[in-house]
Amino acid sequence: MNFARLAALAAALSFTAVALAQGKGPSDPQIAGIVVAANQIDIDAGKLAKSRSKNKQVQDFAQLMITDHTAVNQQAGALVKKLKVKPEDSDTSRSLKSAAKETAGKLKALKGAAFDKAYADNEVAYHQQVLDAIDKVLIPNAQNAELKALIEKVRPAIAAHLDHAKMMASSLGKK
Image 1 (tube, rainbow, N blue to C red):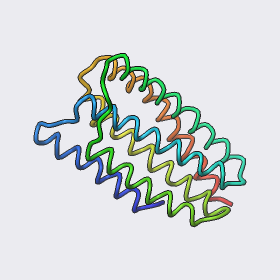
Image 2: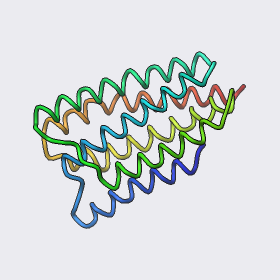
Image 3: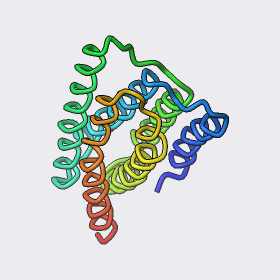
Image 4: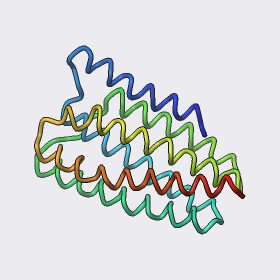
């Protein structure tokens, strides 16, 4: 498991937790920015895995991440356009992007089974952090009913991705 990525994601969430403690949860434009950033991060990771892995299980999972997270970003894009809201960067979205860049660099240095296992472990950690953010930050702070509904609608897919990633990581660890 990539503990640097976990630490960076935890830091991103802690920025938001501090803001919440001060009564300053993320605004709807910031929530939209976090949603878009989180999805783009997993799209990019999926593309990297598709280009680097020779393992069919990893390839199939990576394609699922690309497809599903692209669809969510398209839905989010349509919603923000409808609401005339521009997604805004926040400490959380910036921290997520920074952690993703660092992780991508580390993944690019790996090959074969080491890459596959690191990618799978990262997907487990990432989807757990996203679920935690959805439950503790995004849904509770979304003011717009349609934005909140979109996040609630995609939550089961994120949970399914987490379960799938756990199974993949477990099977890769047994080889």
